[in-house]
Length: 376
Ligand SMILES: Nc1ncnc2c1ncn2[C@@H]1O[C@H](COP(=O)(O)OP(=O)(O)OP(=O)(O)O)[C@@H](O)[C@H]1O
Ligand SMILES: [Mg+2]
Image (cartoon, rainbow, N blue to C red):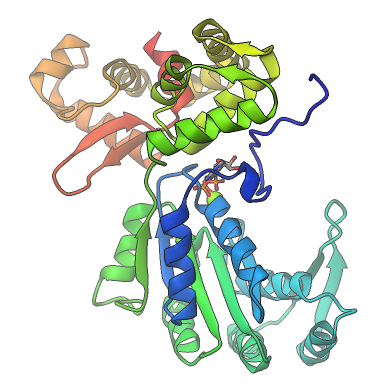
């Protein structure tokens, strides 16, 4: 059993067999794409947006005539890097030995690119080195028009889309909006996790993306579906697990996809044929021990009041009224003004997450494992 690859993967997409549920979300993304509707995919970090995009692409690529392009713009700082990233993604999708790839190379030759290859992945990387911003705008339009003219339905997922709000070129939203509107054969998924930023970007009447996309909020996978999935995956690898153990896993990881996968991954490594609550507890301890160094680093990065507040939030699990006396005096956090200040700092550092869906409003430690560690 020991040499079997761990089926609870923590990176990348590994096909529908190792992917849990997301049926409704996948169907909606595909329906939108077929109806030429652009989608904004939103969730907190590590909930499964990127996985969902690849799952959706996996389905679409089985249909005739769909070409799926994935671009992660997390590391881009400006319109120039965005353009380079876009061009690289297109060339990765259509290698030079394919007829579309050849046509693409012919097109970008006109933009004087520098083409290099990533040492690790072997993927092509394109960079245009222009002195003027307008030239990038021109190339970007050229790239999208190229896709538009192929005899294909093209879907482009731009992951970590909120990044464009940090570009020094304040017209990026407007520029993209203009380009995107003119395309008929190219449909988009904009995905990201800075909820407020993205919602503002897409919902404010003053902003160019206003009413141009359909939102999809990705929540937790339903516990029942995750239970069936976990049981099936273990069973297929000849490991038995009872419902109590699975309930424990889902509760401890808040059914937050990455954390649930990570705990199951550890349990898979550490277990024999029968998994019990005891096996699960040991796996939880191992994970917290492994991450302890990182957690201590966090402490060095925060002020003492921030750290104390973080600990208090972890102990409560969810805090609905963080400045109320009942909470601040229970944990000796000082006056409400200073708690408010620390809280704002923790939220902006993404150490604490604020859930503010319609009627519920609470704060929680963002990293589930850190929360469990602080709680102890
Ligand atoms: N439906 C699923 N079934 C099984 N594993 C999944 C599923 N969705 C996501 N995962 C796994 O959960 C982890 C987090 O998913 P993913 O990276 O897609 O989240 P994300 O929302 O894009 O996160 P971030 O905001 O940090 O980019 C990954 O290890 C991924 O493989
Ligand atoms: Mg992601």
